[in-house]
Image 1 (cartoon, rainbow, N blue to C red):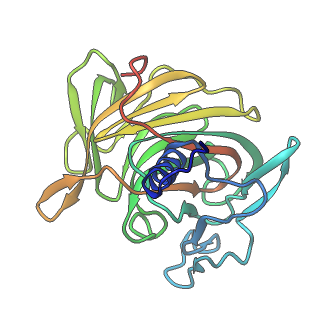
Image 2 (image 1 turned 180 degrees about the vertical axis):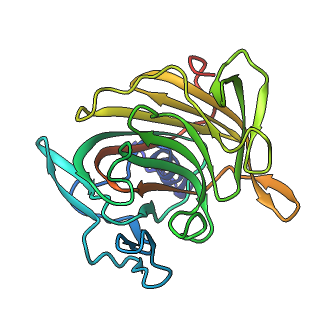
Length: 277
């Protein structure tokens, strides 16, 4: 007797396929163009007056100077961020409970007002709200710092907050897994910046692998295979209080330096791996 699948069986298989597909790793960058991403350019810096112009920001998906472009770098597609203007490139979609991996390396070009500073960018996550919330350039978000020598640091952007175990070293607060968690926010004495530990960044010009784990209100920053920070109780300012911040877009900063990004891959997770928890 020849087996004939019932409608119920077919529907069950279809649901399973959809579920499996949604939980499988997903490439956020196709290596050819910026499909699935939005660009935002803030007000230009006017060197003659030493400040950013208060008007004339190109804004959303308007990039006349090609700050964000796709090219071949070391034999494969990469996103080049020139750094000429401050702004960001952000995913159209929002994400929660995931493991994100990507690679970056520094270029050579630098621009005012940071032409004499460390090369700087940043991986912003749980990005929500308007694009110009922080300094007229970036969304409210948690920041996995991408800066020469400081890769893996934390910054709270435009009202985002985290609790991070840290010890005071001089005027700074350095991640210390054995220390008591401190609330990093603009509203507390410790401020909104925590320094990673250890330093795992490769020399400028080499590719670095960044991994970001987010599950619930917890995040883990990993640089070249080393955990450099664990962060807890992700939240954001709402009125006089706070609310959870556990979902949002992913945004990469343009902040005065040429930088290349590639191999963006995201995968849903049901828990933090024991090795990094």
